[in-house]
Length: 130
Image 1 (tube, one colour):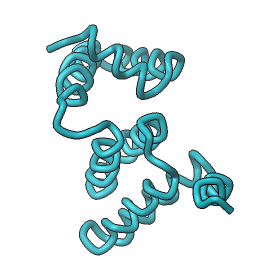
Image 2 (tube, one colour):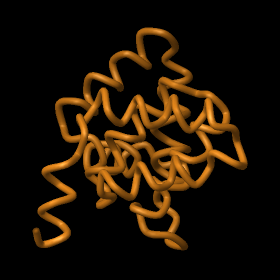
Image 3 (cartoon, helix red, strand yellow):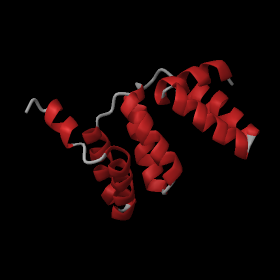
Image 4 (cartoon, helix red, strand yellow):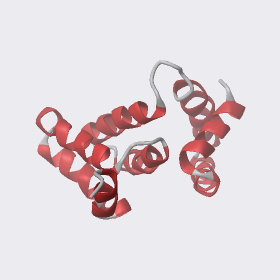
């Protein structure tokens, strides 16, 4: 497990302040859990070279929405934006899973995106050149 690399990656994906806040919350509920997430999940899994972070984020969002893991979903939606995913790509990922994971799972995910970022209309018009 690589704690130093995990901390660096978490800060890159969340920003320094939010990474510290999340890390403190994990430490509060379980120092062992925090160590495992930082060292293994962040320091090993997210550090693997096979996929870029944008793609990893979209895959993670799809999996967490399908499993109904709302806390992880909301955190990963925030990380996805910093990892290069657009509002539209996140919503399209959630729309895509609807027939596979169920419309309620897609709905919960899309509602989370809306709560976190709003409608995304400004971003979509900027990215389409309108």
